[in-house]
Length: 388
Image (cartoon, rainbow, N blue to C red):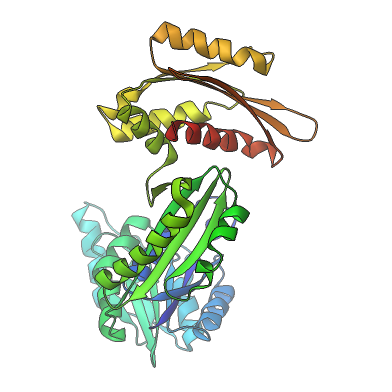
């Protein structure tokens, strides 16, 4: 099974001015066709540094995919950098220039002279026509290795990857397998506790099991390599069954499922409606529930009646009465209040939950970074709702 590295090119990415979504898309598509990805690198718009990164990647893998730097401006250096890394010059391709001009004519425009440099690619490269943009892509082969350069515009990159590059990789490297992943989401328990329960499964080689901790949530990822999706699915299912046996109700969802969606679905299944009061969370819980209601649509969305952000709470003991008042006013079954109070060395999180048969006031200290306190509190509040 071949291995690959991704190189995203652009000083604006390196400096954090824009978010690199291309690498994530490429990584997932490589996973789908069974290509191992071991590294992702970002480098600025500098010919020498780009060439050096490409050469270093070629010492480790068979496939190098670059994105960005194929535009017409002076700070689009990828063509020259790839040529330098491969020890060749760039050369003009008249057919690419014809394609670029035709693309401009379809929009009633004329290319400027600098657009002509987009028709230059490394000597011996395989040109890839770009029907959705003006920047042609290309592939340079060396022995069993391939350097593939794609535009940085996400729409163009995705189209060329799916319609040209992946078919090429399947043919060249005889790809028949796949790599599939499934993520189980847990709440209400820490990473070390999860690890203690499943440590032996984390030592598996295929499928592999790994943990990713977030504020108030731990994800358990299962990844399988196999000759077919059906085999990979079965491998994942076997491990997932064991994980569910050990973790039980700690697991609230899989893959794209969210805690707020699970919470709303649970309320709907009980035929309950919910009101929420927040203090000092910036609308964290209310916003997540509102967005979940929009995604789920009717009738599940009706489980969330309303939310209220308050700014005049002087003590945690006032929270239950404020929740009870709003609950009675709206005539709903469930009332939830969440408040965060700063303390000298930590944050104090208070949760007030009123249901048809009980009233709870829960206090939980949070000693992590203050800016994450609202997210941590929101996770715990939503976890209360999904376990009702």
